[in-house]
Amino acid sequence: MVELINNRKVKIVGYSTEKNWLDQLPNKEWLCAMVVNDKPRRYIDEVINKIINNDVGYVCTMGKQAELVHDLIDEEITFRESEIEKPYLPKHSIITTWDIDIEEEIWFALFAAYSEEIEIKEVVILDMTDGLEMPRVETFLEKIIKESEK
Image (cartoon, rainbow, N blue to C red):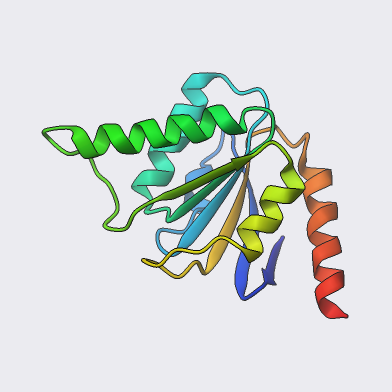
């Protein structure tokens, strides 16, 4: 599913350890809306490293682990900024937000998230719930699309 909402290309990508989900991510001018409920830390760390390395501009975390994942992203950014050898960071600042409420954070990602340094042209909803939250996400996106057609 790829839609255009508020002049932003929107797509859903499913995280999996068995297929290459990274190939589906953009590498500039994008926002990652990460849905996370009950993932082990090692998988969260993998995703954080890969989205930073793919020049994410904004990260919105949502679901049961939203606050934890948000804090881990901020910690990784701070670590990369303070290291002597300076692991990779994009030239722009990475903005992070979180909300347990999935619909609130998706709406925020589509309509309110803004960066002075980059234009957000694409929103990737990264499903780390093994598809459990996707019916809810898809229903909410369909509702937004219908409302925008009025």
